[in-house]
Structures are given as structure tokens and as C-alpha cells.
Amino acid sequence: MRLAARMDRIGTETAFEAAARARALEATGRSVIHLEIGEPDFDTPANIREAAKRALDRGATHYTPTVGIPELRSAIAADATARKGFAVSRDRVIVVPGGKPVMFFAILALIEEGDEVIYPDPGFPIYESMVDYIGGTAVPCPIRQENAFRLDPAELASLVTRRTKLVIINSPANPTGGVSTRQDLEQIAALAREHDLVVLADEIYGRTIYEGEHVSIASLPCMAERTIVLDGFSKTYAMTGWRLGYAIVPEKLVTPFSRLIVNSVSCTNAATQWAGVEALTGPQDSVAAMVEEFRARRDLIVDGLNGIPGITCLRPAGAFYAFPDISGTGLTGAELADRLLAEAGVSALAGTAFGRVGTHHLRFSYANSRENIAEAMRRTRAVVEPLAARAVAAR
Image (cartoon, rainbow, N blue to C red; front, side, top):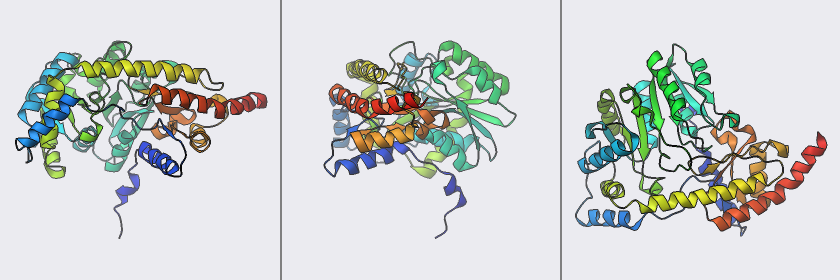
């Protein structure tokens, strides 16, 4: 069997591979602390689960409208209007099974072979993978620790060419936890208007924020008509396994997105959509409680990492990841990730899983208990301290 040549261009999401290696190690009897997977460790709130059960009991087991049930699209439109700062009508909302289809559909609908897409580096690996897969040119925009892991609009501007068609931004960001300021986004918006660019704004972590404010670039002047907003339920409501996401798209993209859904997944699970209605319209106290717990865990892991020789870590403003610089250990992130798993039973991800800028970084997800995070830091120190001492002696 001969595969299509484009299959050589498709990437993967390393977190799942790392989790599989960690589970294989656990199966041998080793204790492993999982800090690799980016999903909340909380259960989906009870009211949301009950809404799905009720939907199943009343027969929500059939096809739904391609772009989502009207009740969920209306709930998303109302929530987005209130939280994102711009008027969202129901007919611009497209419901899909998870956030990744929004990335795929946007790139499929807009990018011709050779068109350039600027994406954050480090950033979610599927951005680059999907651009490469369909024959576009993926152009990384470095996201640097010295700029608080915020995208630098001036550096972005330097990358724009006549072939640039799409810019992908992610705030709060995976893997860094960086949050773009309103001023950052105003400059990016001006650039998009000047060069007639479309923006894919990944806002999946928009409600997991600790400092500053979450600003949707679509709320800025003349940006709603050139912005695809990606959001969903997996992070905010601990619903990763439900596979429920959505896009808010310019009018011109409603039909293309609809056709791509028809040709790929037909529609999104019926009962899951009714759970989404409850998530948005029901009590929000579980969201606030989860964010506060993540804040406490963030402080615990950042303080722990900064107390280990050879490691420096910024305090992320959003999401639930720490992205420390480990260059003082004398190892790359990939080398240290391997040693932490093998020697300490701590499963983290190499920064290069998210781009070239992450060579001397690790990503730790603090979606785990405080007790496990504290133990992971103790184990990490035991591995890193001797490495850092040797690195210092070798200078």
C-alpha cells in the first residue's frame, strides 16, 4: 500500500506519545507523576453531566443540524457577546467536535498551496502540522521568555510577505501561559487590516486567566469580519472527552465551514451539545473554583521550579502550564524530559514538542494535585541539582 505523499508532512501531538510512555513505565510498577497532558484533572460538573443524561433519555440520539443545534448556537452567541466584547449572532456560530476541526477547517478553507501562515513558536503543534499537510508554508513567529512569552507585534510584522494569508494567535497560550495585552492585539489588528490578513484567534484558555484581562482580537475595530475565533468547552468545563468546540466566523466562511463538516463528521454529538447548553447557561461557580485551584498550583510549581538550581520559570498569566528555561542544567529539554521520566518518574514534555524556540525548555502541566506537584518538584530537584552543579563547574 502506497500512502499519499502529503502523509509525510503531517505531524502529531507529542503529549499523547509521552503519556503512553509514562503509562508503559507505570505498568512495570514504577510510580509516575503525570505533568504532560493538557487537560483539567477535575470531573465535568454534575449539572452538565445530568443535562446530557436527560437529553439521552428524551431521545437526543440522532443527527443534528450540521452547524449545531439552535439552542447551543444561541447560548454560545449570548455568552460570547457578554464575555468577548463584540456582538455575536447565532448564524456566525459553528459547533464542531472539539477545537481542532476549527484549525483544520480554517486552513482548508483559506490556504492555497504556497500561501504563508504565521503561527506562534512555541505553540500548539497542530497549527504547523495542518499548514504543512495541505501544502501551505508555515512561518514560525518566535515567542520569547524575555518578552513574557507574548507575541511581539514588531517581529510579527517583519514576517509578513505578499504570500501571507493567515495569522494564528493563542492567548492565553499553550505551552507558555503567556497572555497578549490589549496593546499587543491592537498592533496585530492594525497589521491585519493593513495587509488584508485573516486571523485565527485560539481562545480555548480564555477563562483560565490569573493576571490581566482576556481580550478577543475580534472585539477590536473592523476585526470581527477578518477573525475566526476558536473556543470550546474542554478546558473551561473539564470536558475534554466530550469533544465539543465552536468557531465564530465571518459570514463568508459559514457555508465553507458547513460543507467541510458535511464532508467530514456530518455533525456534533447530540447529547454533548445539550450538555454544552447547560454548561453556558447553568451555574458558573465550578469554573471560578477550578481557576482558583489552578492559581494555587501555578504558584506552587513556579516557586518549586525557581528553587531548583539551573532552572528559571516565569509565572504564567493564564492557561495551566509552566514553561521553564532549563539551559542551566547543561541539557536540552528533550534530554532532561527523558531523564526525569526514567530516573524520577516525572512525565513532562520537551519544549521542542511545541517548536524550535523551546529547545531549552520543558512544559509542565499543573493539572494535577498539589500533593503530586510538590512531590514532582522534589523528584525533579534530585535529578537536576547534580546536573546544574556540573554545568557550573564546566564553564
